[in-house]
Amino acid sequence: MTANPPVGPASAPPHLFDELQDLLPPLRAMLHRHQEVLDQYRDPEGYVIEDKQRAYEDARWDTALEASDTLVALVSRLEQLVPHPPRRAFTLAVTGPAHHEVDDVWLFVVDGTDVTDAWQSLSALPVFRQWAELEYPTRNGVLDQPTLLPHSCHAGIAAPGMYTDLRQEQARTATVRIPAPIAPDVPPRPAGSRRPR
Image 1 (spheres, rainbow, N blue to C red):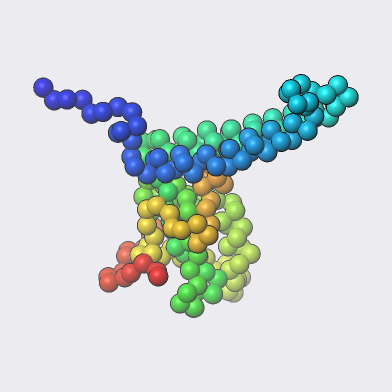
Image 2 (tube, one colour):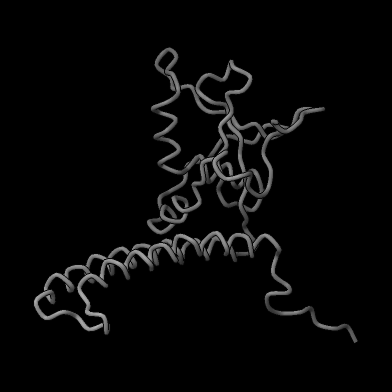
């Protein structure tokens, strides 16, 4: 009799643990910040100071709104991490506005099932399209478009500070169901190409 595969954390894709770990620091930071805001209206025993009740309620309202908005984005992000087929972070390299220069390469991180899916998601993000409209030149009335460099793309993420992480923006966009335009096809990987240094 064939044994059933293990169920639970042991059977989860390795990258999923990294993705979940990335979600925790900003949530912890928000919780700590909210506690600090509310604690200024409480006495040492944790009770709300009587003459600060109104300010405390206003602060609770503000922190609750932020927490609610964050929860919507968090749920969307978790839904992206556990669909079928599974999604994971991809680092995508695109030509910069001065793409005649060898080192003018921009790195963006989004979730996707593969490079093609990640590129389509990135191309659909309003913040990415706004960046392209601001940064790229217009030639004969036509906006010069960023070009994907597939040989420089890879699953996972690089060292912090070397890329622009748009996964949170991707999650927020998914919650409002913005129709995604069809992104350009991923060009074939050139023979003998290498990842950037």
